[in-house]
View (cartoon, rainbow, N blue to C red):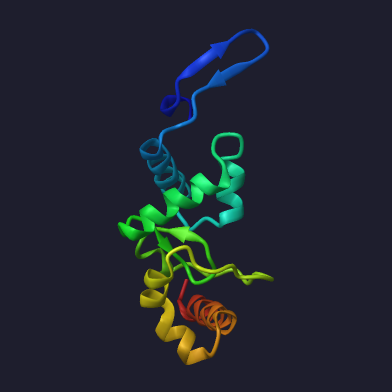
Length: 139
């Protein structure tokens, strides 16, 4: 991340860097997802950016990325690129928080949630389906 931030102060014990702008933060989030190669959960993303940016700013940046279709919110709340949902096995969580951009979430996942009855049931359906697909593929 140091290439995206500028050093404000440095001595032998400490380095202070300027927090990234919103545009830089958007690039950092996209880079994290790209580097990982699969969707990343809110908790993992927050941990990766701890000390760099607060939750409110991170949420705001994610909302902008989702609205521009650069990032997709998966049914389980993880964040990835369009197309990653085809191979991603969602993670069952104890508590699914509300989607960051409800209209985009409904458009992408609404039919599945309606067909299964709940977000939790939709997650379980996708988990079962993906595991069956993996077993059926010849090695």
